[in-house]
Length: 537
Image 1 (cartoon, rainbow, N blue to C red):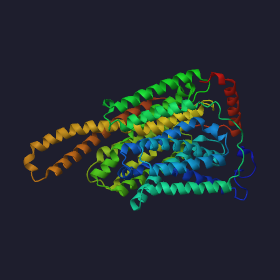
Image 2 (image 1 turned 60 degrees about the horizontal axis):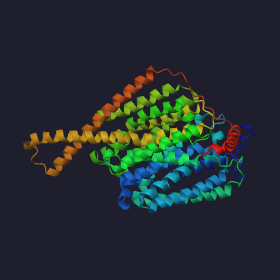
Image 3 (image 1 turned 60 degrees about the vertical axis):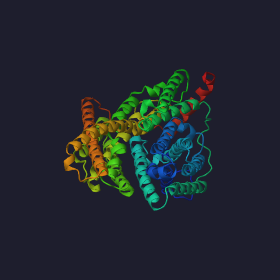
Image 4 (image 1 turned 30 degrees about the vertical axis):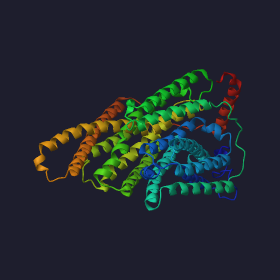
């Protein structure tokens, strides 16, 4: 692919046929990326429907959904090698074909291993297709290659599609069947393949770099570790944690996978993830922030649906309508980050402070307002702020990795780590901790409230046993949630104090290298691989 900025005239995509107007070409690729992002293989919003029809548990659906995120994270380390090995046309045709099969399999199978493996593969090819499209229009989005601008676009598309796909899935399954979402997206992918065949020329890639030398064994081991970690977090509560043989096996396997990968990274010339990426300061800083920030918002997965469904009495459509509030927050959050972070060049520290303040307000609102009679419209403010906070943190710390000074050949490995810690660990570790915390708090509260009801049995004799149990459970749940929101708010305030006293004058200046320079780097890297192949295991 040539460097568009050096060409006179408006932005162009030479890979597309000439009869398409230049101004229309990027918007066709935007249409492609929307189809790709909507094609998730499995839709966690339809989990309740799948549980009823596929003889699966809620945990099975979550495991498959997170496997898709793992596939996307693992792809980061090799996405540029594959991009420069195959043309955009070839990449999109292959990825769409795989995603079509993945959607069909996910709609038909009730086998958990097949479902998880399918989603893992689908996530990998979904990420590759996403890169093929986004890299083509990158210079249209930001001619200066400012990655802060580019990541605003990326998270606007990705996070908004997550909310919209959930809404579409629920309304489609409510009016027909949840399988229709897979059928519709398979049809959209087929339509996209037709457009690719018609509109994109069968051009050879910008350079031919064989895939020889990629540490494929390392990618499998890292994916295995991520799957083991996710399995422990998702099934831990159901299997009673360390009393379960399955959890112990997953922990041992995950630990072995990490040890083997660390050993191989110390002896291989080109490991899948190198020590240089793992020791990078920006990667560690981002990981530390994710491990604090996303558990603060993990109540979304543990509390909100239970509270809205069991306490407020919302049905599926009312529950999914809450996604619109988060959707609005994402749009405002991206716009705010674009103006302050990319244009005004506010510091990383300032944006991080703002995100934690918004997360603190989200927790504060629920701590003081969680009750039996909350209207759906009243939830707009906390969910809106939660959407803003999450997208700010994601854009800021992914940009920081680009600006960390890593060599380009190591940068994708750092993004791979960031994808795992931000998307996978952020989505699984927090809910696992808070879910277990809620379980113990509920048990304590149930014991206390049951004794209170016994003491005042003369005043509640007109209630049936079922009504009494329901009242006790609801009261215990609300008190437990309020208590946990309070402790999380304290943790958020302490985090704010740490951020305030830290000194960080760094401002965003994350410039992506030119494509011709990337090709030179990859060509040199491939030569070194050929020279050192006798060292590989």
